[in-house]
Image (cartoon, rainbow, N blue to C red; front, side, top):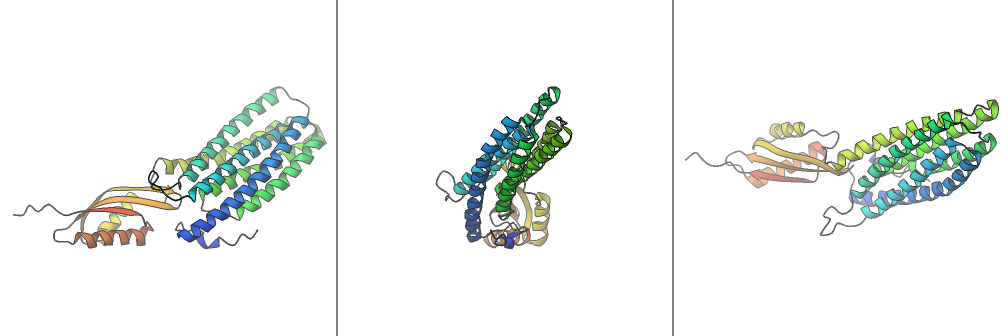
Length: 307
């Protein structure tokens, strides 16, 4: 896996379409591979968790299940995003990936709640745990997660879908580490409560990732102004740089996905100004100053009431 193929669009949200398609195909392959890997091992973890009686292992397995599910969702997202726009979906399926990441984030939060609930039950009614089996399965889990992380981490870091997937796997890595820690403590000291306690720590980490993903994707889904843009700034900038504009209003800016910003606005022209050249000037300025290449600009000529 060479992870250098995507260094060219770090820190810059602007993608040309050719890079977009390549990145999508690459992302899709990475996600599919990671999904198959985590799902296969998740089955082993469930069996190990049930036999050894470890919640930390079951928590990690449950996390791996949502992981595999999230990776599958991400894969569908990449697949759909490649489909062209049609008559009923003028933006195509681009936003499905954001929706998938949002569902993913909610799944992470639900999972965290379940683990904490289970852990409280275990602390109230401790059960013996087989430390050695726990250690073996958790160590293998760590290796699998490292592999999956390695595969995904080489992908496009600006893609929210990819980011949600990486968060899942990172949480998984920590889950495996926690399970290994629990196994060692149980083998050395026989103190069983360490298992549910460490599973709660995993739950907190999972919840943290979930909140981040839900916030960033939810903002896109409610048509929030993209981070780093300000309606006030855009208005002030256009009024400052375009002498032909009398006023700028009705600005709406939103994002189709994490890398494509859309904007609509009204500009009132000064008397005697060529409205078409003003319209082009506004679009050019939005492109240069704010990197917005998808603007719908309406120019209003002043009402002539001087006579």
